[in-house]
Image 1 (cartoon, rainbow, N blue to C red):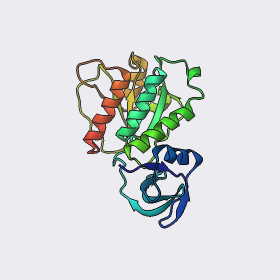
Image 2: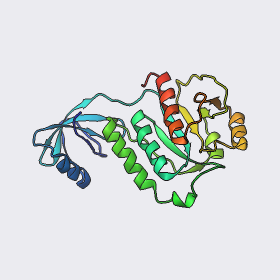
Image 3: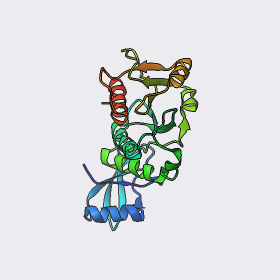
Length: 227
């Protein structure tokens, strides 16, 4: 795969665009050569082929979009921060459309520890977009309570270890809900039922929250033909 660089500005075919200081440093670290073909992406769903020259890139053409056909949002309880960051990285690689960090009844982390992490989380997601060949940067919403998230419009699937073994049809945009290690509380599960959410479980074994999140995203994406 060609080296990839992020350019947030509008990009036109035939134009020459300057890389940011950070991306120029990235190009030097990668030892990108004069005249080498590279990819640019704008974070909004567009990929471009370009030619590197003097730390700028001449735009040659628009190239294929590798974004999933179905938008999957991952609404996940905030777990231990190092594990939560792994989920951000890997779920981005799997094609998640957006992230909703959840404040749940059994949250594992004091919410004070989360404040100020947004820039770090966005950087993790950006690097995963570069690595995986995506062209759109999944937004990370501000943390919200489960009660707020479950009342939103749209198709919702709550993955819970005690849910019945059913399979849902999720070809429309879907929000996948994943709880903390201790699962959602009974109060939250009842809220989900009242909101019309579907329920599924991930087989007979109990999974860690970070494993459950990635397994659930993979299953939902596979049903839509995106994996």
